[in-house]
Length: 260
Image (cartoon, rainbow, N blue to C red):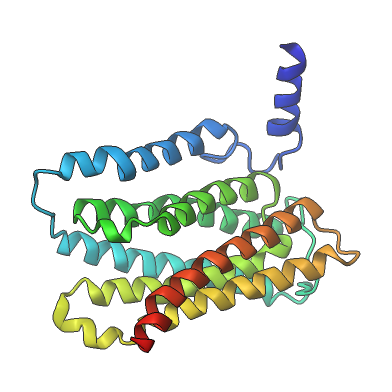
């Protein structure tokens, strides 16, 4: 038992970045596990049962405010990442993590924490789908993507807050600006669907994002880059899984329909 406790303390505390351990939701893995578990339980079990004999909620005002917030939050994250990427010392080919307490290093770590918090707020996407009884939107891809990103961002803020990951955060924030703009326009009603004819290109943007992330981290993996090899492997694998899953969705949703 003592050996197990020592191993736990080593992995959860000793290996972690000490700068971020007192920040909300970082030190204790119970936070992210509890929220993710509650999310999965509500979306796949409790929510559908509660809504079974109820009419779907419209939530027009709620969705309007929520989507405007997400567009603004994503713009903020993209801006902060861009500030880091345009710094004269930033190396796109290989950017090690600065674990110091300089203002620049803390700005990067703080941005990563906000990015982590954003993943919690984005879980509301699925909850709103359930409350509106749009169960076709609560697909395995959708739920898996939200869940794995939440855990991935917890690992990032705990062990790898910044460095080579900044490009991925920037790309994802840009994609989310476009995605939540689409959701915002769609929330106005069916008569506004003609203004979101570009929906298919959103999935293409996501696929391009995953491809860039894969190449970016593979390049660092097979070089002398002083960025965690484990992190590079994890993000390469995750990019491959997302490319496969989003690629299948794209082919099913658009290519087959165009042939029909």
